Structures are given as structure tokens and as C-alpha cells.
Amino acid sequence: MAKTALVAEDKQKDTKPNTLVQQTTSSIERARTFLGDVRNEMRKVVTPSRKEVQATTTVVLVTVFIFAAYFWVVDTVFTFGLNRLLTKLVGPQ
Image (cartoon, rainbow, N blue to C red):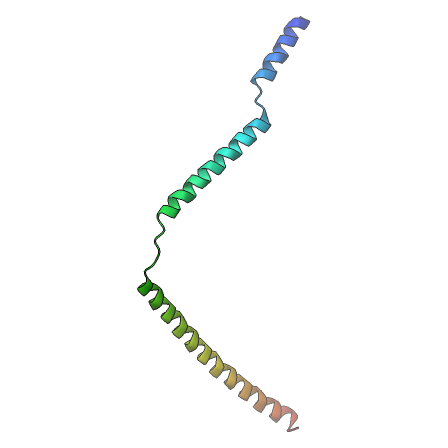
């Protein structure tokens, strides 16, 4: 009877997987899959031509200057309006 119990315990230990080994193997496999996916995506990357880069740079610079001018006008209007309001409420200094 005791011998049967020991044999049963040994069988359970043998069939029980080592979780540390599984985790390590799983991590390595996931890393390998990830790097393979990265490699496949990098193959799809296309560098733009010089003409495309110049065109998009020009668009960005023009847009920045337009927004800068717009915000300068809005800031000037708000500053003027706030100064008029404060002068009216408090009086000239």
C-alpha cells in the first residue's frame, strides 16, 4: 500500500510540468515571434524621395507661419480688449 502511494506520487511529479522552464520557453518563443513580426514590418517601410521630403517640409513651414500669424492676431485682440476692460473698470493709472 505504501509502495503504491509512493509510485503514484512519483507519477504525479513526473507529469507535472516545470513552470519555470515553461515560462522561460514561452518568453523566448514570444520574443522570437515579436522580432519576426518586426522584421516583416521593416521590410514594408519605404523611404520617401528627396522631392517628397521637400514638399512636405514646405507645407509644414507654411502651416506653422500661418498659425503663428493667426495666434498673434488673436492674442493682440484679446490683449487690447482686456486692457480696455480693465481701464474702464479700474480707471487709468
